[in-house]
Image (cartoon, rainbow, N blue to C red; front, side, top):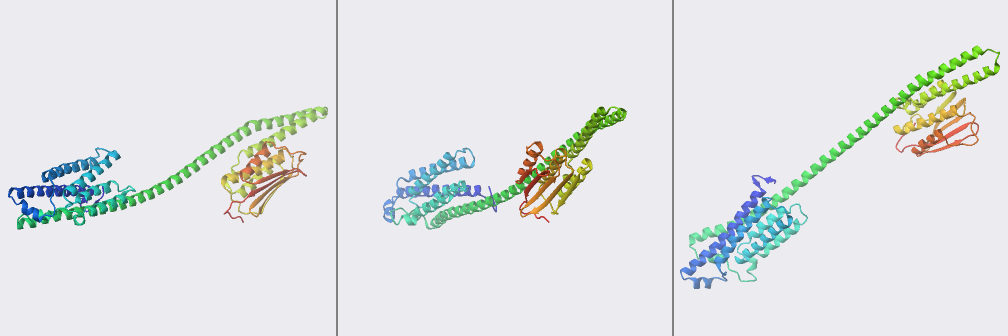
Length: 443
């Protein structure tokens, strides 16, 4: 519970309970004692002539108020002691307090209605986070006003406690009036304090929730950033593992199959020298085997080079393609022209790798299947897109059938949401249109 100064809401409620219980017991007890005194000194006729109305059995009224006060204490202890957490039972205690309080007020002829304020103060405290709280406040105010003695006596005859106080001596009258008015005033003050504490507590809860929401938002942002960093780290680790595996495979191919074919080619060359010119058929067959083995060595070198695509990791896309072109020219012994009128080729990492692979696959197909000697690679900027064109002077083909390489090219272009066309006229041509991302600027 929140507190203001040295008072906690529970303390205020306990004080209000003591005041309300004391008020109903003192008033009913005072009426009972005065009634008995009037009867004992035989002044009932005089008292009745001055009184507007008189209560019924005053001893019964006093007994009922004492029993009701005990019920108030018990229900209050049940709620505040967390003895019962059932919402239905808790609301039943409020209903019981309201009914008993209303009966006490009626029996006392509306001379004290502060017990209702105590009941509603408890209800407000319990419902401070509930949407029905405004309704309870309205019911409390209406009930309190309708049970005010000054209002009720305008419509029905009720006895006034002042008639009983006047029976006492002059010195005692002042004290009793002071106690009576003080109990009424203290009840109202305690109710107002309860309302203030509830309002302040609700504001503090709102502020605390806002602070918690702010912290939660910051924590979510940090968590999201951490997740992004973790995902990036996992991707980097996976990419590093892939590069290491590619390098291992390339090394194994180079050290085993490459050396084997190199030795085989050297052995065939030795056989050609030993055969001489006496056996032309054998020499021609050996020349063919030598050519096949050397082409195999060239293919292995190109495969090893493609298995080590670390250029996009180290360089920007344009520089990586330039390095690919130079390495392919050196390994395959072909002429490759690279023309790029766009200085800043900026895509996402996976997109740059896809474009790099498209160029790499196109060059490999041109050399391996097209037997090309000259290849042109051009990248040009159009409105909203990049045009990537790879042309060669190879043997081409009569009918284009999408093999493993062409399928991979098409898949990568589709991944970039672009278009690709293959044509075989005077060689082979791969024409790609790749959209430029919004917000990027290319020189």
